Structures are given as C-alpha cells and as structure tokens.
Image (cartoon, rainbow, N blue to C red; front, side, top):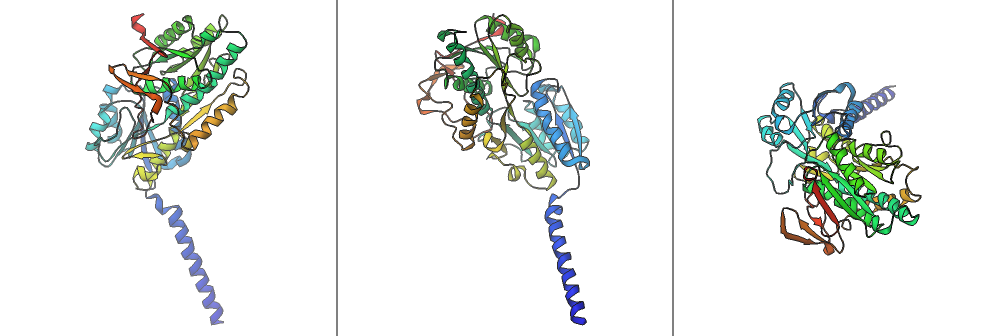
Length: 401
C-alpha cells in the first residue's frame, strides 16, 4: 500500500513539474503581462500609405487583445514630431512606432532609455551610430515594384500585339514625390520589371515635391497620360493617379499599378495589380520582443544591420495583392509567382542589372555601369539606388510645366 501511495505521489510531482515547465515556456518567457504601444502617423488612414501601415496596429490589437493598450497620433508632420512623441512617452508607452521621416525621433530617443523607438527608415543607416533604443525598419519594396512591373509589361506587350498601341508607344508613367534614392529605386525597379517583358519600354517621371497631395498627384498623372503613357504607377500617398487613369480610360487605353493599398474600388476598369510592404511582420516581432524583455533584433526575422532591419518576399515583408483578373493578361499570375520564387530564394542581383548607364541626378559626373549589377538593401533597409538610367528614363518637376 505504501508503495502504491509513493508511486502516486511521485507521479503527481512529476506532472506538477512538467506543468510548471510548460507554463514557464509558454507564459513566463513573455516577461511582461501588458504593454502600452504608441503609433504616430504622418497622415491619416484615408491615405494608402498610412492605411497600409495601420494594418500593423490592427494586427497587434488582434494578437494581444487586452494585454496591449494602443495610443495613436495622426497627421503629424515631420518637423512637428516632438510634442506628440513626448506626449506618448509621458503617457507610459513602452514602444512607439512612427511611419514618417523625422530626425527628431533619433534625437529624442536618448531622453527615454526605457522606451523603444521604431521608425521606418528614412536614410542609409549603415555605419551610423544611433541610440541603443532607436530602431529602423523597412520592407525591401523594390522587389514588389519589379514584380508589378512584370504584370505591367505583359499588359503592354498584349496591347502591342493586338494593335492597340505601336511598338514605339511602350511608355510607362510614374508619379513620384521627391528625387530621393528611395523613390528612384522604386520606379527603376518597376521599369526593370516592365523591360523584362518589353525590352524597349521607357519611362517618364513627374515629381510632385510632396508626399501627399491628391490634386498634384492627379495632375501629374493626367499630364503623363496626355503625353502618351499607357501604364501609370506612383510613389506618393493618395488615390489621385488611380482616379486619373479611371477617368481617362474611356478615351484612351491606360492602366494603373498601385502601391500600399488596393485600388480596385476606385479604379475597377484600370487597376492592374498592387504591391505592398507588410509592416506587420516587423511590428509584431518588435512588440513580442519588448513583451519578453528581449532585444528587438534578436526576435525579428529579417536582414539585420545593427538596429536596422529589412526583408522582402522571403520573409513575407513584401507581398502582391489585388491582381485584377479582368484586366491582367492570362499567365500574369504565373509569371509574377516565378519572380517571387526567385526572390524567395535570395536571388536579387538581377533587378538593377543590364546594359545601362546610370547617372546621379545630383552629380552628372557620378555614373554607374550596371552591367555588373547593383545589389539593393545590401547593408541597410533604406533603398540606396539613386541613378537615372540614361536614354531610358526622363524626369521633370510638376511645377516646371
């Protein structure tokens, strides 16, 4: 009888120990029971860029529920960052995310060593000393731009084959905000995708010199359409270019390629496909890290450069959405998936490569021979390709017209 009793006691103790071990693995490793998370937006959720970024906030709320309190500030200009940032810090935020390009975040971070500050990268962070609690991150958007360019190229090729346009009319238009390397990298990758299908395609670019202006963006798109562009894309924040394509469609063939948010609702006849950065992957990992009292970069699954992180299709940080099967050419999805598979395998060196000469718009003496290729995001999450392809891309500023 004593032996049976002893066996039962030992079995209970074993089960209790196993329960405690599992409990610690699943729960105690979290470190904290709750967090306060702040989000500062440079715009509001009516614009595609901020809407896309806000999906990460929704993902945090869905994952953590009552364990996380969310605080947000919208329509914060870069040079007005200090007040809302200090407000969120004083309200007890443990981690704050910002999707704007203000240097004030990095400058203020040392004043709040107990708070982690995570900002979408706005400059080349390689070899830069930053506060330990300051982090930057960005999806490698050029990959999605290239894949969307394949879809656009297939559409243009169909238009040439069916006689809708002539072979010399393969002109792509791009509405751009500023002549930064981030923007130049994006539209160059897009054109490279187009030229992988239509080798003689060229591009015209108009800079609006603002990230968010419906009127200016639509005006730029209207001018590009008037100048004969048959596909329009953008690196700006509003639906203006998509609306311009939809309005022009009844009179001339023109299609739209989006970024950040699906445009099917506002441009059902012309929206072709959209690429987006999936901010959720980084932001969820960063919140996980703070919840577990671990360093953010030890948890984030991506390409880590100090306190800077990036990734593309291979980690899900970039994705394609909203392929319009009513507009796209048969076989487009298969062609896109083939390119995505290559990116997923880490094959990225072919995007910025070919018999091209790139010219630095800020210094014409600075040129780049692309026959050897250029690897984007090799050392930083911020895009660094900043060369204009000679005889292939023309650009101008909207206010000059």
